[in-house]
Length: 538
Image 1: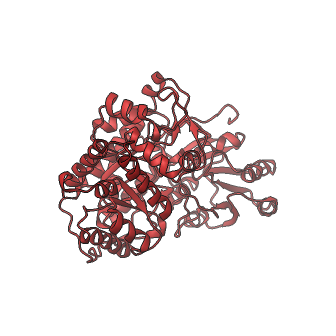
Image 2: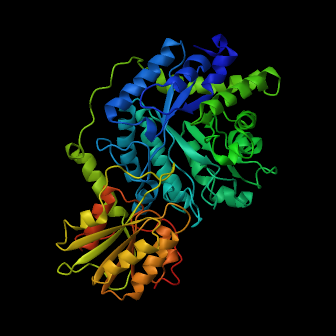
Image 3: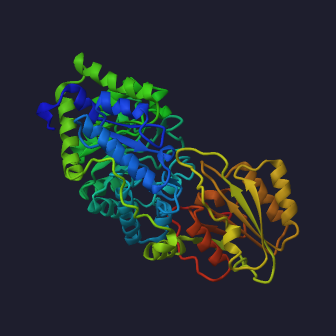
């Protein structure tokens, strides 16, 4: 299929990536592929079972597309690593998140784990990863980026990001750098509202844009837009996704980017609530986007597709604009998907248990030890082997698109028990109420050694965790250690804590590494990739 033989409907269909809600092709995705010539799909946890199921799903979707005479599908996913990973299965490697990799100070680690991830995703039939996140996280109150960033230094973010891009694309997996022109210095989650970055253009060039400039030089296949307002670039109060000044003026013309621009999901409130899905899709294409992402709802997906058709038929969008986007889409699909075999046969059962991948296992253990960061210690470490230890573990009991609990996990108490004989653990909510706090404090009163694990998914340590920490400090334990297992900024809320370590994620490798450090068996080798307010932390 080439541009000259495609109908308008076929062209517009190629400009959409959409999601659906099942482990097999359902009526929603069949309708989009068969009636609307869909260009790509996106997987979430709702689509993921075991590796064989995912491989079969991918093959079935590609066959559906081929049977309609359509182009091969992009099959995309947000498999960023760490705390944002849609594939949650013990036979798929648990790749570290970006901030943990940033804490190692070694972009080679980012390259190596990204090669592992790319190989596994391709075996599942996934050919595009909406990663790496190139946002420079220099706002401690950022509720949505945080550990998804490599850190606050734009040069380090660029080095790690380019390493990921090269690793993915050398294997044949399209990388998608996000969220252009930068979502790091915001304090609003664009899933929920409109954020603004107020900096002038000089500052944007020095910080936010630098990783994207390097990604373009590295030949990144795709750049995803941010639903964030940038007054220095766009005088109207509209997010970058809908701004011609940002997408065409800055990205296409000034930065000479000539590959695919994809929007972040238009169902996010920053677009849906303020502009509407259909109008948002039209404005995004007018701004210079090639591909529109609508992740969840069939009515929204069809509304967006029909809105683009109507805009072309009424002359609001010229067919030349559509053709230019589809030309770029065809070029990338020919480059990455030309050899794709479409059948409903399952992929080989190449996925094995963790202990059967010793080289990957060694790499992930090494990275976790190189990531764990000791921020402060007033004589609290290591823990005494002969004295009992209480671990207070925060359990994640709610789920968002950037905060998904793992079905298989190792608590710090589990991990520490392999090093110390007398370990007890009490589990509280990540947002503990007064009753949970009192229960934890009552338990802690009988221990000379206490390790408080903190977990923050949003912009600040939950108030219940902060209160628990303050009251633990009043109990005057011989050894009191706090360890953050996501957001390193937790120390800003509890600056008097006598010892503080950062892990950046609560995945098993990192809990095992943290336990080894606490027990004095290993040294914490990580370096903070962001700044903390340490004035009161001495």
